[in-house]
Length: 336
Figure (cartoon, rainbow, N blue to C red):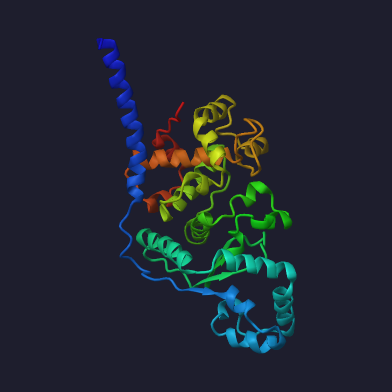
């Protein structure tokens, strides 16, 4: 082999090694020893099963019988109006169908409990001072306003009807766009739980953002989600289809070149935010194959690069509010 060819091969191997080292670097940080931490067991209180099992012929008596166990959701007292609402809910034919589909999709709560436990144990590893309240599952009727996971002072509430993979086109029937309903799969449950944990216990809102700050702000959220469940693949973390994820990864350099070339990095105009952060089926400015929220994708790559190139803990990263410093220290260089 000629000398010049030897040098090219060696250079290629060095570039590959450096690239892989950065990837392994942040991944290694997330592979933490969490299995001996609390909670060793998570009891999930299945409010959905208890509620729909109540005899509607003796509804008030049935509700009162389950109220002590589900007081965090049903409250200390129930008015006649409350009882009427609950009865109307459980006897609604469409809600009954959703509940039946939920029972079919989740006949055994043990797998859900195991996934939830892993997220809570990862949280305990990074934030030992945080103790989450009791965890409940319920059927919301696919309530867009509340979303799949809510956390209150006395409860973590997981709406299982957000994880039905659009069986029988159930999400189409409630008007959910396909680009959202494809995220409604069981694999996304820990992602949604981790996001709710993030906004409840960790997030510090930063105002007066530009594009760079918004990207990093969102990147921090996705990195936290990944830290709570390192087994999640990128398409689940970002809510992309596998084809969209492939497009974003293959065109990372093009996306970044467009951001820089169009002077978007420090812009704060509505048009730049619409192109980079609005949700939707695709990003028309790039391609019909390009996913929406490409600013989210780039933000996650910047944070991964930052964590690979700096000895910082997750806790410190979450506290940092000098986003220009994070950006500079990330040494972010997208793949071509």
